[in-house]
Length: 248
Ligand SMILES: C[S@@+](CC[C@H](N)C(=O)[O-])C[C@H]1O[C@@H](n2cnc3c(N)ncnc32)[C@H](O)[C@@H]1O
Image 1 (cartoon, protein in one colour):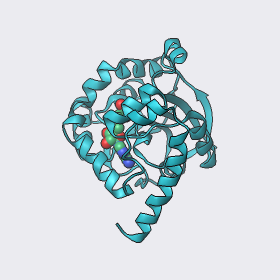
Image 2 (cartoon, rainbow, N blue to C red):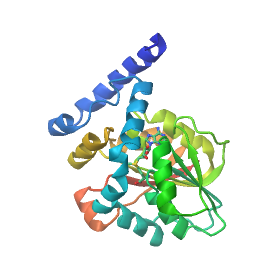
Image 3 (tube, protein in one colour):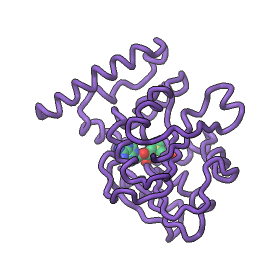
Image 4 (tube, protein in one colour):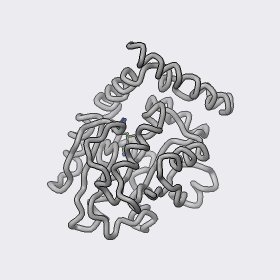
């Protein structure tokens, strides 16, 4: 590890430790500890390995079993996140194409769609499952996106941000590539007990809702509207954080 990377890593440990201490003991015991414990490069390699490998191959099935796929479709069908009029849509961390499938169905026919992921293997799986010539597939890291400033008017980012030990570089990049007034549907794992189990399964972190809202504000993303899959999800605080953000 270079001294610079090491310094970054130690700084992150302190921040993570403070946030960790505020979580209930049980959540702390269950939650995966790798994010924030190793250097950014090591952690990114680990995430890529997880999704390139057998666990990534099971992602689409897991999304079906957890009802993420059908409930996600409802968000677009009922226009809880409105795609009408969108011209350029970016799906960040496309995985097996779970969200991209809804985008193909509910976005205007002329809208351009880009599927983006760290894992080339996940992009290959998404391409196979989507069976459409329409999306473009791009492999890169969310913290360093190969797109010009203000390129997109809609962004979907489903369960990706939890794979960044520090969300700021990723959120700042998302803010950069969105045009003013552009809208983003952000879904991410919350610091609840079920979120802690998700973190353990997928080697990721969890987020405190208020803390995440504050950080979004810092990078020019307005916390517009919290969305729930169903009233039951709202009552039980299940399904994680689901929010519409607007680029200021
Ligand atoms: C849990 S899957 C989410 C799939 C889909 N978006 C959904 O909502 O079901 C997370 C995806 O994010 C990708 N990912 C993780 N870290 C990333 C990063 N730093 N940059 C881009 N993609 C990343 C993983 O490769 C994986 O395909």
